Each structure stands twice: as C-alpha cells, then as structure tokens.
Amino acid sequence: MKHPVYLDYNATTPIDPEVIKEMIPFIDSLYGNPSSSYSIGRSNKEAVEKARSQVAEFINCNQEEIVFTSCATESNNLAIKGIAWANKDKGRHIITSAIEHPAVTEVCKYLSSQGFEITYLPVDQYGRVDPEQVKEVIRPDTVLITIMHANNEVGTIQPIREIGAIARQKNIAFHTDASQSAGKIETDVNKLGVDLLTIAGHKLYAPKGIGALYIQKGTRIENLMHGAGQERGMRPGTENVIHTVGLGKACEVALRDYKQNQHNMMASRDRLLDGLVSRLGNKVHVIGKLENCLPNTLSVAFENVSAHALASFIGSDVLISTGSACHSGETTISSVLQAMNLDFRTATATVRVSTGKRTMEKEIDFAVEVLVNAIKKLTL
Image (cartoon, rainbow, N blue to C red):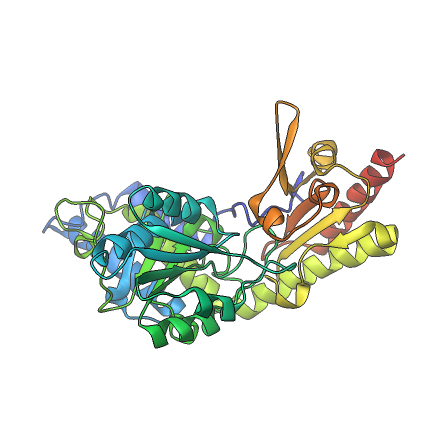
C-alpha cells in the first residue's frame, strides 16, 4: 500500500501503466514531425490519427469530430468562445449554471465584458439543474447552453439528455464539460444529445497537458488560434504527439474496463462511507445525493470539524480536498456549495473524497481509521 493514501482522484489521476508503455516510443525514438513526409513523420501522423479514432470510439462519434487541445480549459474556451463569436449575428445570450468550473465561468465572465449576456441557472440542494428552468430562460437570441456533465466538487450528475433535447428542439448549440464524468459514467455524445463535449486527459489516467473537444459535424464554430492548419485549422500548431497518444490509449483502456472500474470506484466510496457512519454515526452528513452522483465521489461534512484543520491533520497519511479556501485567516466557501445553499458551518466542514479505479480495500480501511481518529481529536 502506497503512503500517503491518495483519495483525490477528481483533482487528477496517475498515468496508467498501459498509457506510459504506449507513449514511450514517441519519447524515445519516434520524434518526427507529423507534418513531415518521411517515415518517422508519417508514423507520428498515423499515431495521432489512431488516438483520434480511440477517443472517437470512447464517446461514440466520428473521428473527424475530435479536435485535440492542451487541456479541458482550452477545450472549454474553444467551445464557448468559438460558438459565441461564430453566432453573434444570431444573438449574444448564453445559458450556463451557477456551479460550473472556472474554466467555464471565467470564459462566460469574459464574454459578458464583450457584450454577451449570461444567464446563470440556480441548482437545487443536491446541486442539480432543473431542465424546465433551462426551457424557461431560453430567448430568441440564445446561441449556446453550456452545462457540465457532472460536478467536480460534489459529483452531482446533470440531466444532460433532457437539456440536450430542449436545445435540439430550439436549435441552440449545447456544450457539456465532461472532464469529471469521462470514464466514470457513460459519455456517449449521441445519447447525451450534445453538440460539443470536453475531455481532460489528466482526469482519465492520461498525462496532464492534453485534452480533446468533440465538435459535431456541421456545428458553426470559429477557431481561436491561427497557424499552419493542424487539427483542421481548429487548433493549429505542431501536434503534441506524446500526450495525444497517451490520451488515445487512456480512452481505449477506459472503454474496455468501464464496468469493472465503475464497480471498483463505487465499492471503494461506499466502503469508506459505511466505515465512517458505523464509527461516527450522525456526525457524518453527505452533501448531494449518492443516487445521482459520480460513482467515485463523496462530498461529506463532519459535525463541528473544520475541513481545513482535518485535511491538514491527516495530510501525511491520507490526501483529500476541501470545499472551502482559507486566505489570510479568512475562509471563503466554494461557489458550488454556495449555490447549493449550504450554511457556512456545514460548508466549512465539507471535504471531498474521490476514489480511483485501483483504490484498494486496505487503503479505504486505513483512511477510515485515520479520519475517525483525527475527527475525534479535533472535536475534543
């Protein structure tokens, strides 16, 4: 068992050994430029296209609908700004939610300074958007709806299929950030009914510094960068072959092992919660609704315990994250927990535990012991 026990897989994941093996030749000897005509250039071009087909199969789309980017933030920027600029003659209204990642909210904030109007939809106590409210705020000048597939902090899964059906009916482009959901729940773009979908490599056991954006064929979108024309001109620049190959392999592995991984993540999460409840009883308060949550994610508050104090106290043994930030002695609550209307006391006691596809029972049992002992000491 590795020490400390890592239980923050929503923050990032280690690179899968199969992914590392796939990348090594392109680190070691296959260094050619994919745009070159000689053999090591062609082999790199073929590797990029193989990865594109692996990602496409993973989310069930056509190969030419995948654009590789540097990360999910870039994918979100390309999706949101690209749709906004390409369709500004139709309108300047965008719909999003109050619990999006900064990679979406900051883009929307920028666009609001450029003459676009943003509607931020509220969520219920579990962090879920109501599709009926989406329908109610649509206007004739609405050009984009962007709602994350699953929340990174509390794990709540959004009703993307229902919202997608509304968007299609109204002929409005629909984007979802699937950074947290890919590999954990189904991300079939046809079933979801989305026009654009974001993938983050490092959340999927691929390297950091690689992402992808699905853009449905026929979607009216403007590229943000200009150059030699790689990625069909949507993302020009010499391809990051090493990381692209890694993302492709990660998607292949995720698709192959999907059921097994989902089962292990959920079993680990539930074992952790059961262990905590059996030892601490009603001092444990689950944030969100596990019936509509990512299988690996547990957002939980411990009564009369500071989340920051807890995370710091156990940091040498177990790694988790908190739902608030502390700067210069002042505690600020995340926008997600604020949108869910959590009271200050509960929000500052909230931590996120997220399991991985290879999290072991002995790691969970160790984490339970560490957490329980720490909570008892911190509440003396």
